[in-house]
Amino acid sequence: MTSGFPVKTKQKAVIVNKQKTDILCSHFADKLFVIVTQFSKVGNLIELTRDVAVDDDFTPTRPSYSTKVLMGRDEPLMHVLAKNVLGKLDIKKPVLLALALKDESPQTVALLSEEIKGMM
Amino acid sequence: MTSGFPVKTKQKAVIVNKQKTDILCSHFADKLFVIVTQFSKVGNLIELTRDVAVDDDFTPTRPSYSTKVLMGRDEPLMHVLAKNVLGKLDIKKPVLLALALKDESPQTVALLSEEIKGMM
Picture 1 (tube, each protein chain N blue to C red):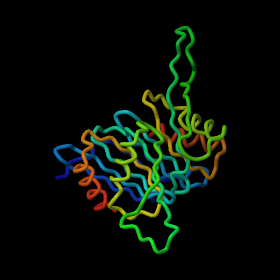
Picture 2 (picture 1 turned 90 degrees about the horizontal axis):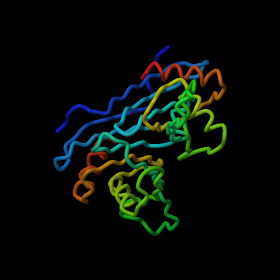
Picture 3 (picture 1 turned 90 degrees about the vertical axis):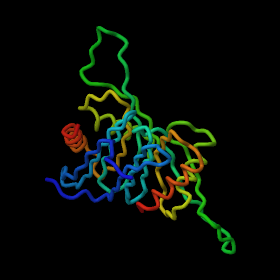
Picture 4 (picture 1 turned 135 degrees about the horizontal axis):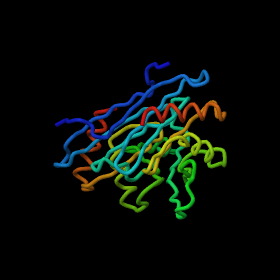
């Protein structure tokens, strides 16, 4: 009846700027699903789709994403946070990001991005 | 640096009506997150909120949910499928359901609902 779960999932708990943070990454065929929570809550749910550069001469220094808040606080800060959390990653698939942060400072977000990068 | 992941997560792979199905349930503080996939894809994402009965004399035989398609096919069948997948469960929290089914027959959905019930 039972066999191996084929969706590759990694999870860890880290302390980032004194905040206990749970990170979970699930690699689905159509999407990368990332949960980053400091409340044990799903919190906000954001869909990120990678933008395609149409100009061959233009090589962006970092990937650019379009963001859509599916659930939670649809405010500019949330879009910025989502983009920055994934800023250091080179992901081709659309990303579904659940984000619930106590500490939304740029320093923490940069550290979180490093942690997620290490799980790819 | 690392400690236990506090979000309780259960996952299993089952064969339901000859279809290999992956089921994952994560118990967050604010939400129950359930993934049911026969494609290794996230597919459709539906938010279910339990309705509150205002009439004390009226005791429904099964819980009723309001559904909202956050991502994917926003069509009547998807709302019905989501409600039926969770139909046998008595869940107080809002549910975030990712649903990607090859076989959307009522028989399969009833079997899936039993499988999820066994994971609660």
